[in-house]
Length: 113
Length: 114
Image 1 (spheres, rainbow over the protein chains, first blue to last red):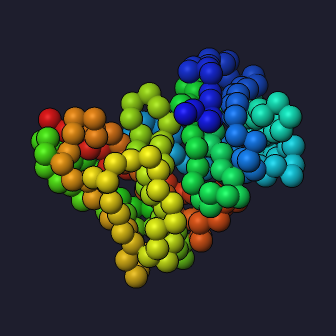
Image 2 (image 1 turned 90 degrees about the vertical axis):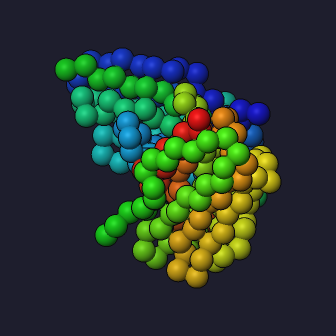
């Protein structure tokens, strides 16, 4: 039962442009969402989070948008840099399940110089 | 400060054997979670522990078990290994395991079953 979905397995963007990574979820009880970045041979690194009481959260070049009615979130990276090339995972959890996170299958971002 | 550390980094076992994976959380973190990641998929939740108590369990068979020690480190045990258990096993820690806390991951243990 895939409760969190990332429908784009890969994305290619030119350096300096915007990268937009998308994520959809099905469980309306989810109220906390995160994005992780993963390089090969390393564990996922926490990037940014958003609570369901907000619709936007920014941290430097990274902004996460949450549309609760559409059960959709997105990660914007502006400007994109070659070092951003990695696999990005979105994850979600709900108040009822403590720290148990459901992950999407990931989007591989390639930022071309 | 040290992040989440996992050992070993790689492990090769044969079907039917048993394996123990170890995890040390970030200093001050009291909650540890275990995830399994197979190729091409996102991490899948196995267990969460807080203060040595199991708080949550994912959809994994009883061959999988875990425990947390008084120093908050944790072990994941898998018995009667199957080929399908080949995966990257990730450990994550958080302060107290609340639903609105980010988890911080180690680099994982790559388990290969022959």
